[in-house]
Image (cartoon, rainbow, N blue to C red; front, side):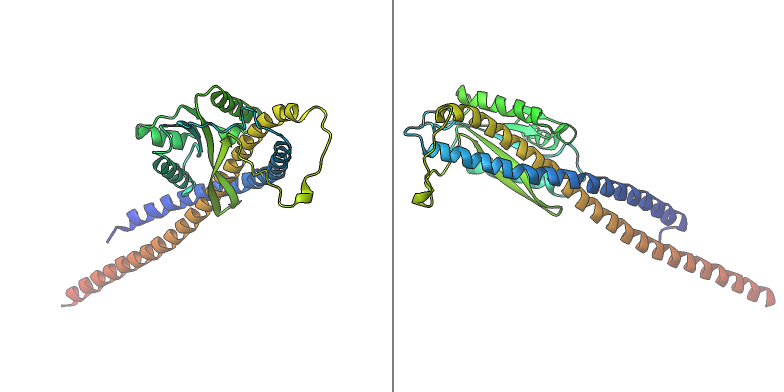
Length: 290
């Protein structure tokens, strides 16, 4: 049986851990509220912009915009994987990495080459150790999430697509549903895929555009790429805070249970030690009487 000193030392250690996990839970809970609001507020704008572009494309006689044309030969793809920079967030990173590995495995014959861009250190380090070094790694997303960063990433991806370096671009990010649920989501960023068929024949209303539809698409399509990247960033940040809050809450609860068990073990050991001492005293007293 462990000594009283070792049990007491372990109890103190677990209590210190409990204080840390409780503090991390409170920090993540405070940050989650704002991150969740940002993620949810970005969805209507992205959805409305996509709908607007879909209506514009439906009115074109022929599609010749470089971001809309689907190439006959699709050889190279790029996946932008979102993970966190730090751990202690449960299965958040593991689920994202598992989804990325599934994409690589399922599309090994579809594409001759699949490039990886990592937003978050965990995903980049994981694949670097497995000989799939990311083309680019972006870190500190939680601290620096802003539209300017999304614009830079989106413009670089757009340039790589229009120049022919890649034939398809995908975003693999966690979609925030709740603090306990984050869904790995694969979204095809480029080329755009729109279902231009209207559900109702009366839904096609003719408008007069100023400037022309083509000029509007030249402005809206790059903006939509930036918006989708920015939305994925906000979803990833909210998901990370939610996953970390849930993980730290569970860790705090486990630490509390462990303290209770160790305290019970300590009390039993202390009682056994006292009983042993009493038996020794009684035995010594009886020996003196004899």
